[in-house]
Length: 386
Image (tube, rainbow, N blue to C red; front, side, top):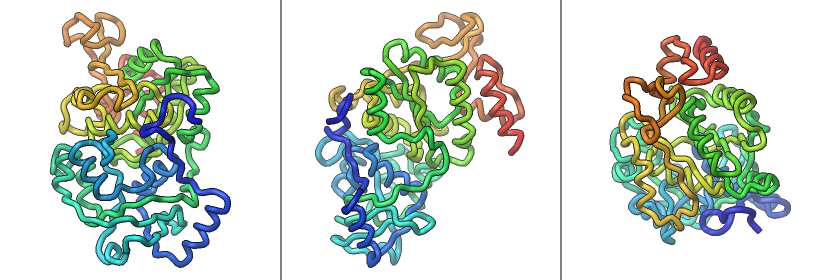
């Protein structure tokens, strides 16, 4: 029986094969066709296997793919906002036949999983880009990756026989079943999730602590899969989180666990996706800030808030907590938002991950109004070594 909030679709998927089933599947891979996955595809594969992407049991077939692109729903009608697909190209794509099993391997040629190929199909990349990312420009990192992927998609259920090898963040790696168990053990009935790909600055800290006032605990869930090249590396970000939690947060009310997915930069659609996935991890609430999962100027500041209006609350099943633009106010002598601060914007210190990276690249030490001194030192050291 699943503890806490019901996973998306009703049950937590588990495609990690064990015991005799695993041994039989592994033995069968010796005569199978093989396919090497990219790091992005490996992370998606693992997310499917551990149930983070519940209700998906594999890579999407054509009907699910098309309804997700067109309507942000699976063919069953269940909300799901982003495609999760496996692409192939050229002669490799031609060699695969529907109904056969394919061994999926990583870059070191270790077999990770078996795909029962249900369907292979073509798709319109420009249409997909426009619907999912809101643009056809290949300057957008998500669109660029889409255009560089294969022209044929492979759909079908997977069974994982070997977990990807991880050597980093081992004490902070927890599957959805484990975070759910932990929340249950702690007695947390209301848990808020926070998605981040940037170091936590004062605006983040402010909205997290506001949320902590109305829930039992916080899941700080930094994404450590693939990000774009100028994002701060995961190892540096994790050092920042650990120092911040050690000194400025109540230890018994926060869990730090990595989110091993890749970043799509899909803005509003990714806000829905991030919320549904955190529901699978056991969160009952999810923080949605300004320009969630955005990149450049492709999305409006609060598009990620408005998109939730396209679904009934019970369909999403996790409560979004929407936060306005937050800043440090020199007159208030503290963090505030336009909902709480009466002072002119000339008194406001703008806080964002983009501005933080800009200051660090210029050799500037971010002020205490922007980020904690301990965090500024870690980040400055990183940029000095580049």
